Length: 566
Image (cartoon, rainbow, N blue to C red; front, side, top):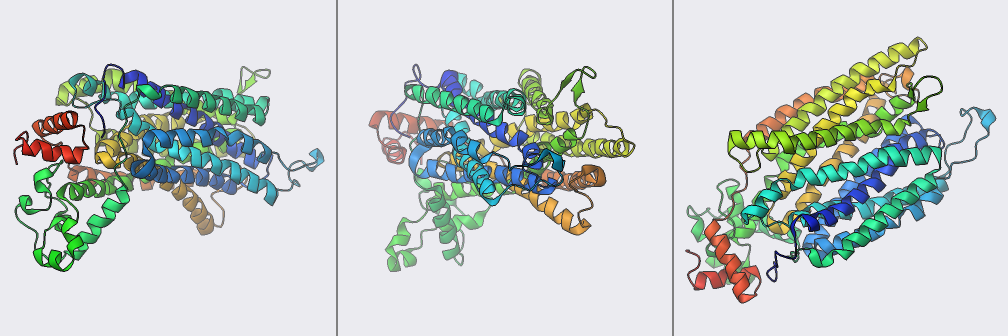
């Protein structure tokens, strides 16, 4: 919170679009590298299929794990705007470090590829430097762009509240355009012109987006950082443990700070209420205990804890998605990608992902234009589909995608054994299904983790959501390693024609069924966040504007002048 905003000159769709543009540029850079990386690792760098897949998934996992750190830094110290600006600057420098590391080791054509030495340690070190420089910059961006974007809308304003409903789908539509550009234009440039040119285009896009973002500084609405959210969480957990032997009051009004609570008290996770118990004996022995966690802080921690069951079921979703960036691209490289006969155009293997992003664009548009209005009329809810309904649809579609992938791979292997290469367009169903699942799943997860989080922890909650991507990519690496050890490398071989990748896909489909059942159990028990009474919110807002004081002090003013009943 801070000074009141001028809604006539700040916020709204223009400000949100300028902010979302940085995420579009980030997606161009990241997808421009990751989508086509596995073919480069297997080809010019002569690494194995399993090692190449794990390098890509570990990179994507680390990138999204660093997003959690980016969210924490924004909430605790820098704020969302400054964190985005700093991260975008780092991301812009990536190609200058990436290009030198992408030089393949010397390899005589006579070797036929089989005798080519794998990349040297120095070359791999430069490659890792480039990848993890990307991870640092992109991680800070991803955790804060959507949060700063929603800050441009006031949910308490009827007009802006209606606009905010569509922010998440439009945000992801715009981001997916960046992915589409990366998997078509950039992949073509990398394969046919040169990787240095491809990374140069990424740098130019990121630099332009950063300049546009900074140019819009005066149009943004800001929320000042309110201190370390991890400190709040730790203090609540410690106080609840310290007071574990004390009886929990039957009346929440007896808890510390109940008269100034900015969120309603909830009956779940009641053991955390003990953190806000005012114990006279303890306070006399330890005066610092008298200034312990308030009821508001306890409820904020409850909100974060209640996210964790859903968080756990979203991990496998991204494990499935990661296959589209690794093994699906490797499958495409062994299939016929020629369009238009013998003299036609050969589609780059990495560009097959275009069907994934076309599906995302199609279903995000259908979601906004068709599904949300229909659901709104059927349910009476402003947002139409609930966030967890979107997540559930995404999980179901991703599981079906793995069934399709297993069937296609079985056919590919059977035809390859007879000396025929089937068309790479057989991969379209699995790519399209994963794209549709992401249109529902990503938007639903992002909306869930932002809307259900306390205001002071919004960026960290976005980072928590992005750790599901991180854990999903890491889980993919772990499963590839575990399957390799358990089967003696029989399922995932350097030559996919000799392996059983279809069984790996079937395994993911079975895991997806169990994961979906677990999600249904958790989702049915989840209670959506309750907003503070409208009168209280209005009173606090008026007090902030009248006093020009921080919100915590304004609450006291509102109580003192009888603006809020206590």
